[in-house]
Length: 171
Image 1 (cartoon, rainbow, N blue to C red):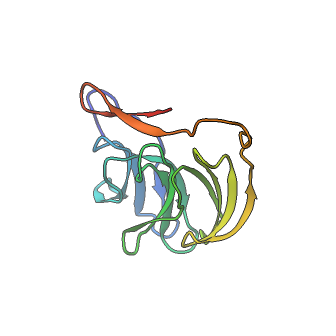
Image 2: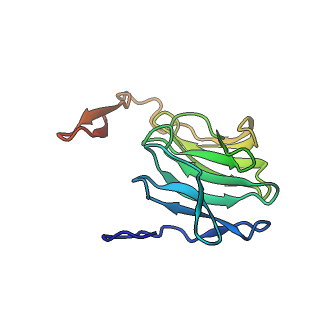
Image 3: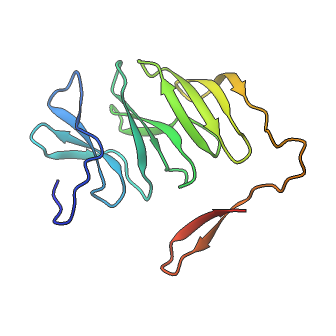
């Protein structure tokens, strides 16, 4: 990857244990941070993710099968959801549900997840999820510390900048 201005290597190359002649590279080649599949000679095989959104963290590969796990803003810039890509079919699946921020810890095989979630309405919630994202059990849910107080409901909204970009706000 080259650029006459700047190259930002956010992550190193991610090699497959069973396929040492391929690797994954995260880059902003198209202006957004996305995942690409390359062969060992550096030739691009496929762009794995695309769109006007960012991969915010890469969580690695499953030990069983060829699944890639990551967190991204695909649902919107204020949300962080957890995804997997099945490399056999190049299919991307969202695992977490609910608008807000999800921080996920997965087991080694990628079949169970611990989802730490918060949003404007949910201060803190921890749940165990199955591989398809179905909630098995809620481990902890914090009470809203503002319950019982006369407060205004937080609302999220956007304003347009002079050059047409959305600016996200809350009141």
